[in-house]
Image 1 (cartoon, rainbow, N blue to C red):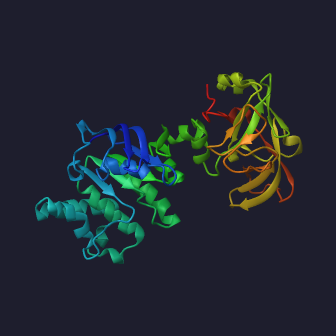
Image 2 (image 1 turned 90 degrees about the vertical axis):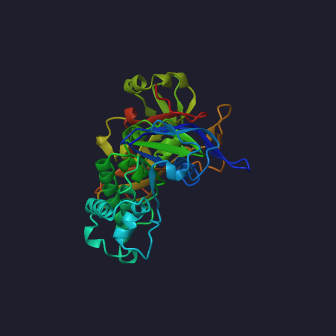
Image 3 (image 1 turned 45 degrees about the vertical axis):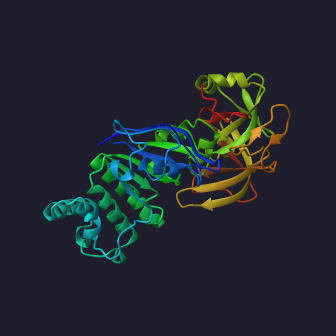
Length: 392
């Protein structure tokens, strides 16, 4: 067993493109670390550098106490599980699981024992004599994991192993993969583009964008304490509502389009740096689940009024899509402090779109004006230029 340590690891190609920029990441022995981000963010390249399938351009990579920058993949004591299973179609399940052991000239009796142990752990015992074509997608993925487990590696690497499964099976396999990893207790680096998968599986989650590590934290801290606009927008479903706003001169409220939202003393205690932004533009973030519907005399504090554009009924809840007269902000956009204009890569409609999560029996109809309660202490604030969280 061993840890994984990447120190200022970068990857750039002959054409000048830098896929990964000075990545610093430590995966402790036994930890399940997930790298998540959109397509092209550098997550798979980072994994392939750990695996020895991509050359490291600069920086240092340790597996355990050993510097492995120039160690071949086969000598790094790793096992990798791919999204396409990579099983041999002419071999049985038992032969696929034990294939790598046969190459190491382990006795047939030992191979049989190790294969049986892995198959029992993965619920594959009754399928050992079948071929991959006779298995479901989830069973094939278990076989691929079994082949990795029997090698007893120091480190597990997983490259989107569940992406080829249907939605229901993916949910089931998330639990299975996590259970197996906890049982064998090996440092695991897992790559996915699915933030729900990342949040439900990882001890810690590393969020990447454009080759740069944005934040590495526990799932709970990523959700409740995003360090910048990108993480705030990427983590959470639905995505956080982000709007351009202006803090009042005395800090007692902020202006969101034509609406004034009061701020209490708790907000300033939680975010003392917010005092520096009095009279200035910021970006305010509101989670959909922090905007319950408020009707009439139920409103005892700040609220937000929006026009209902669509309602999605999900059984246990309603997702209410609404618009307000404030600019919606996306990561990469910025507010120009020198003017009243919103600077963006693409035109922004003055009617900003938002989403609220409300009770399933709430009376909301398309075209109505709906009122949502606002809890100031649950708001998120970001610097409009740097896009970093205003957290102190």
